[in-house]
Length: 61
Image (cartoon, rainbow, N blue to C red; front, side, top):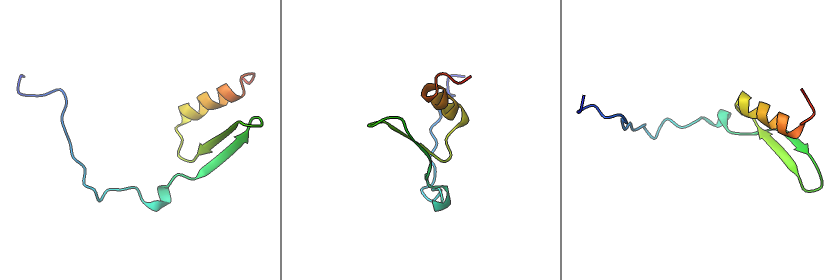
């Protein structure tokens, strides 16, 4: 077991980049006040969006 490390290094090819169709684009923009704006981009994780909405709309259930 000593010869098996806990962390294994892997190297990805440089050619496996995200296609342009998956580029981040603005999906939603909320103006909260004079100097406060929230911008949400596409491909946001659901739990992050849920936490953001709960923080912005703190009286929503």
